[in-house]
Picture (cartoon, protein in one colour):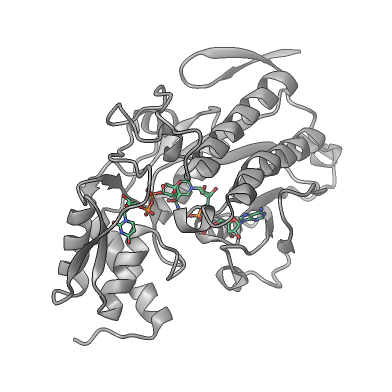
Length: 346
Ligand SMILES: NC(=O)c1ccc[n+]([C@@H]2O[C@H](COP(=O)([O-])OP(=O)(O)OC[C@H]3O[C@@H](n4cnc5c(N)ncnc54)[C@H](O)[C@@H]3O)[C@@H](O)[C@H]2O)c1
Ligand SMILES: O=c1ccn([C@@H]2O[C@H](COP(=O)(O)OP(=O)(O)O[C@H]3OC[C@@H](O)[C@H](O)[C@H]3O)[C@@H](O)[C@H]2O)c(=O)[nH]1
């Protein structure tokens, strides 16, 4: 039977999704939602797990290969009766019975995704194919954490979801940004061809506690450098911009998207836009006014500007970010100081 599903802009007719497990309708079945989080041992994934575990009706299964994630991020849940942790690589098939899949597994920091680009693109393509196959078999709804990197080095500013992007298909970032673009394509093909219930979030730069200290992304770099009294390394020209979203706002947006009726893609990010020099100045002023700011060489294809239009998230999900950069930095500083064992002097 055909069903109308909205992608926010226009309605497309798709097949009904596969039937969910009969257990969901069983009379004596405990009304738990079984939720799979791939990449759940990572930065955003572990915060998402914390939020999902707050609901006593949720059972959460995390699969992760620990490439950039860590069991430490989930230590409060290990041994909990509603929680399960599986070491698994999403490029291999997975057989579990679940109702929802949050598919996050993929290295996100440029230094990590460029480390083994063939593995990164396999994770994005084969990994997403495997998770869609699982969603089809068990009738689960699946959410993909896509990225603002699908807009490449954008020629349109700020970026809304109708922009198709300006991406180098053969560059050093392509394993990630083209990988995510194919992952989005696979999501829509499974949706149209097999009626899978899909959700696509285009995440803009997100920061917060629990990021790897040596993750390599700009906010974690600057905060760790300021705490260690090392120069803040602004990559040239320094006028390139990003828009930074605090992780609790991100998790709220992802859950709203999963629970809502729209397939997306929907931008989730904080429209507050900063140059990298401004970010360095802010971190210096807030954490260590004596620290030096130096400029260093950049890497190829670094996007020159990025800022989300979040009208869709606002209107369709009732979502907007709450935490400003100047409120988020101290929360991250506290976490980094604890992990680095470097207390504030004053
Ligand atoms: N943080 C951001 O700014 C941002 C922006 C846009 C999109 N995203 C997307 O959000 C998701 C999470 O990002 P994050 O910042 O938490 O990164 P992260 O590196 O902290 O987390 C990624 C997790 O995926 C796991 N993983 C990687 N490859 C895997 C594989 N083949 N099989 C199983 N697990 C695997 C890692 O071990 C890690 O735990 C990613 O899909 C990323 O592309 C993040
Ligand atoms: O030490 C640093 C690190 C980075 N930078 C600059 O900071 C900007 C942001 O770089 P990051 O490495 O934090 O992240 P990018 O925005 O390039 O990519 C990110 O985009 C969104 C997600 O999909 C991923 O988390 C990641 O790919 C770049 O312009 C980079 O040149 C510095 O100036 N100094």
